[in-house]
Image (cartoon, rainbow, N blue to C red; front, side):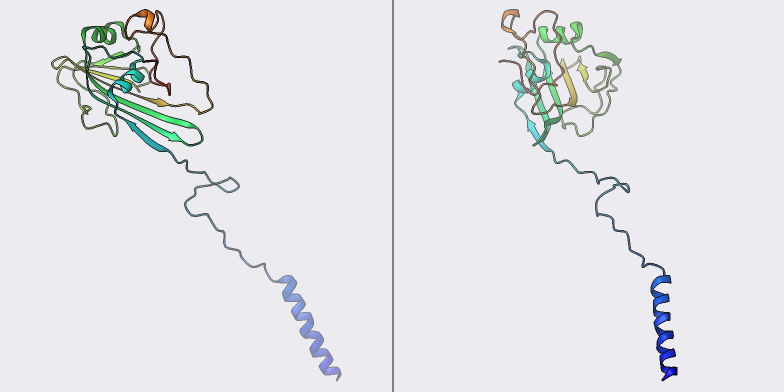
Length: 211
């Protein structure tokens, strides 16, 4: 009987020793699929944007240049793209134009230079624009005059042989709750022109000027 009691006591002591002295079980770390979050930081959320494309030539022209196209301005191609968030409105925008200008538009763009573009090249070497429409030149025509904004977003390519302007610009939009800036008054300053001393806006507004 005493021997049995000794055996039972030894087994109990051994079990207690294993329970307290054994190393804790290893727990495999899990990472949420499709995330690149660092430890201790929330996983980044992928924003869903809807691409909206507008090819209304007159509207794209107005929102690009903030002036009405004149009767002698021939819009060959036009496209405006907007990446829209349901929560924040337009997040990004981009537009492309090909215009055979009348004398006034040509003078306005080349001589007045309202967008403060800088001459880059006279040998036809514009910057390549990813995902541009097929009609927008990837390489400037021979003898083309290329002008670009300081930030590189707006680019004007003038083909003197065909008398055609190829123009593009891109930028960021603004939140839905943002207050829309007042549109310029154009009626008292001649057809399609901004008030004296006011610089045109580079397509950043979500609303076109008044027709």
